[in-house]
Length: 354
Ligand SMILES: C[S@@+](CC[C@H](N)C(=O)[O-])C[C@H]1O[C@@H](n2cnc3c(N)ncnc32)[C@H](O)[C@@H]1O
Image (tube, rainbow, N blue to C red; front, side, top):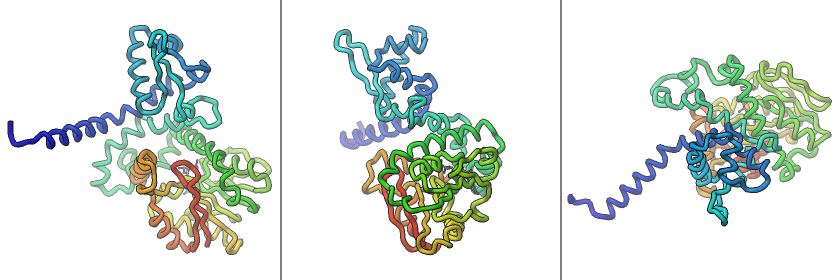
């Protein structure tokens, strides 16, 4: 039949499997959301040993007729590294345990990322990506302007449910900062004051203040974000716009801020940071926590996480950057020296000096 040889056919079938795998990619996120909404990580954690399928189904109060679906969802999630799956010796019944990923989904644990799962799998927010084609062909600066008619920050401001969803997700991400602080104490030691620009509801600043009790911290964010937030002796909240001016300090922290913005806006923000630390001479610093794309050195899953985030950021007119791209932005904003500490999982801490 035809001129197609076996080799060609095999290549096309491999291509087909790759395409089908990618086309079903949304199921990874929806099944993950299903597991979080049903509280499966909590159930396994509370069981204190691997849980059998029948036990899981009865705890979930799912009709026995649906047990086979639970088994298949769990198999799919286990295949994607979210749960561990084993067979009980005596009756071959599947049992499930937590992995390092699902340990991060246990409610009330120190590093619970479930709020981030709920943000990233939200139906309205994910549906905006169906408009990527319309947005790239049009003149709107961001996808959110095409989808909602406003930029994302105005959308959160006007939609209280999403404002809370976003802030809780960011706070959950920030709680992981404590895992890396001991690897970069030199970055914060000796500082008297720090301003966390775009610091949201203050989770990162609180963790840093606790770890470095001599440090006074200001959380600086849009006025509606910090309105009504209570500080402490060492922590205060100030509302404003980082494109206008940033309060004076020994150091400025920018966690997950610069990737939201294009190079032109990043340079403007960094110039305001430079003004903020100017009274410290060459001792003032900017501390950035963001990803550095490095496809050659990174594990493919890490690159996948960074490149996916880059698409989300591109829709906000921001970007994830390679070291070369970061360096260019730093130099154009008038900074001369930087040091990268790859200590935050798929993100790095970058210390920046004028
Ligand atoms: C991606 S969130 C990061 C929050 C926090 N740094 C964290 O990592 O959890 C970006 C933050 O920038 C704030 N932001 C946006 N535009 C701003 C502006 N013009 N001035 C100050 N903050 C701004 C947002 O309100 C939001 O809290």
